[in-house]
Image 1 (tube, rainbow, N blue to C red):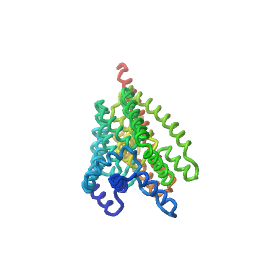
Image 2 (image 1 turned 45 degrees about the vertical axis):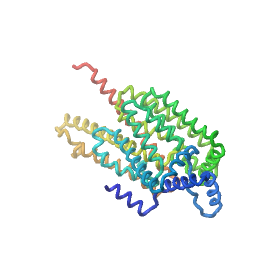
Image 3 (image 1 turned 90 degrees about the vertical axis):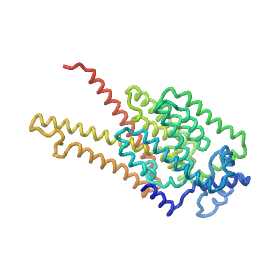
Image 4 (image 1 turned 120 degrees about the vertical axis):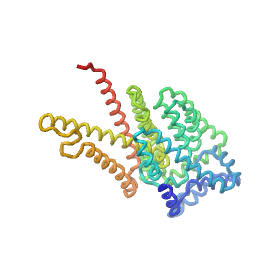
Length: 423
């Protein structure tokens, strides 16, 4: 209820639906027989020469999507508004539900209370992108909901269909085809076929609508040159930095993307193999695999990060919990050693008096709060050139890899200890 009231208050006091408004205007243009890309190019070029003008929001999806808009154009506007708003809401809830499935039983108790707040912190950084009405909330809702039966029961058919459909709107979604491979090595062929299908669909539009496709690419180029919305991936951050210094972003961004995507892909594949050898639970590995897959995308926007917020939250929680457990065990070991050599101490008491569990728990809460607050303050109040979102993504992925390695090695040691003969 608090989240709903907050969203209503934000919508009433600020801007709302800026992306969905573009979709509605494009539907109107298509209904009247206009070329939305030609209109976008004309509007952008007209404004670009004006002093202090802001770049307009224009339709940036492939020509194939216009076929879908023509079908929608037969419905009244109020019907489309109600249905689309409901679809965005259901998509956002589907993302939260899918993230909830990745939590262990003890984590679900507190995560159920934290889920409503996730809507206000996409990628753990505060932002109002939920109010944009971007179609990504629907697409990622379908993709993540379809991923649950995939990683739980090995049924990936709907996941591939959802990714393929999403790639028609957003081609970088094809990078999500790495996720099934990281969870099940048998998915190489299916992922490869789906990726080839996505590329063929995109390329076929060049042949089906040659003029419109050229205009579509020109619209993308104009918006990148003016708005510089490269996103928060390493390549995107580099592209924005080069543009700010009046330098061409290509081919430097392409080279950087190929370099870090290759390294990250190899690291994730090696870790996936070790997870199988260690026989860790899927709940431990799936959030890390998802966040790693997100970083394989060449362009990461706020609405992309929103879909992966719950996995990021789980990774951070598990890393802090594992560190607290390690401190507790170390303190208990030292306490027992001192007790054996001097005066006996209570089992639950630390060296300086306070209970070990209380000390470790308070430290974990303080560290977790600092890790959450500091990047938010830096991103909101700091200079625009600070890539806070990328830093959070990389830090969370690093914490996830560390946690998985720790859990795997601890399980290996425990298994070896169980095999030792008793004396």
